[in-house]
Length: 513
Image (cartoon, rainbow, N blue to C red):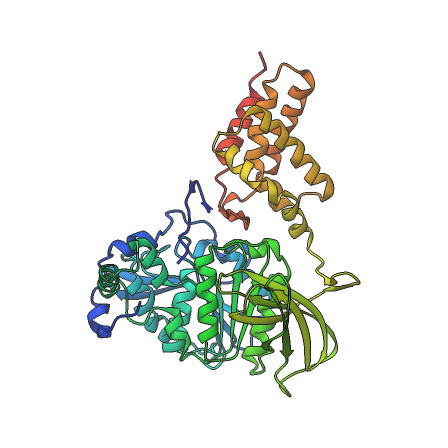
């Protein structure tokens, strides 16, 4: 993740039995695990007003040294439907605009907030505070006359999804969206170097007792949470986190749907790889769930044949839930089967009415299966149907293989010959699909660094190409750098490219020797 002018990595993410009041009294003292997990960025970037949205600043005073702050974004035609956004451990409310903008455009009012110690919220960030400050937030929300307490949805990503799951169980809601839901127990075990011994188990148990708040583990909360839930995972996130989400999905007590995003890393990467569909899927789920008619599928798996290579064919049956809803026109359905190793396997079909079946060849019995409607799919004789990606998604896919070299270039470690090849490959990618404004802005420092290299060449043609790249670097810099977000495999928040572009200006202003 790249945030403002600094590069940092967001950490991907135990239950104990102390009384709530005892744990709550310790929220002001971060422990070692808190410090490892919670990484509030220093930068504050954009606010709703920057995008023309009317918003009310929120400040909920917890005590003299702690508060919760954020923004209430009303919607005059939202019918009092409200989505509460929970961001992850490495961001703050100032970069949540891709989320609250599409939700507001879809007709929802939104509360986006920062936990204690994040953004403009006072206090020290702790896991206890992430959870046990929430009752005051929800008390504030329910007291608003423009909020229908029976039409509140929670949307969390990363560690925010852990808090959203806890809030759904303890504070109540009518719909739940959980993206990249991790297991704190798994992360703690990994950080402690669990070797499976009795001594290791004892050490881990003590660490759980001393470091983690009561009932924070999503898998445990899932067993008693019954509101409609949409789980979002990806094949590019850490396998540990993907398997944790699938386990939680398996234990979830209410109506549930799992969408596995292919070719996708950690959030907000899905906003690039599945641009358009990402927003449509979440909006459709929230609309149906808050209306009391969640359009979710029941899937079952049955082994129907074995093969000589030791694998087997499994038949996945998809049902729409009886009379709850059905499709009068054929709808494209993507079926996913997840194995115990976290690998995901997909099948496609067209569904009319209540049910359909898909056959998949699998190496083992699936631990879970799911199905989603694919909006805007196009029939295809060979693949059943295909997605029609947006221009942004297509351009992103065309440069996907180049990001490793781009990051190496950004770290000033790419050899000159490789820099020339990168410039050639970028030109080829752009020839396939013109780069959207967002992608051009993201590549501003790349153009600057490549331009600097070529401008110093002894070859006149290369020098001219270098000058053009330096000029392009300056031209693509966004008018409002603080609003820039690139939802790539390594997300960028703000505009750390400014330093490279400033150098491009200096080089253009200096006559060549």
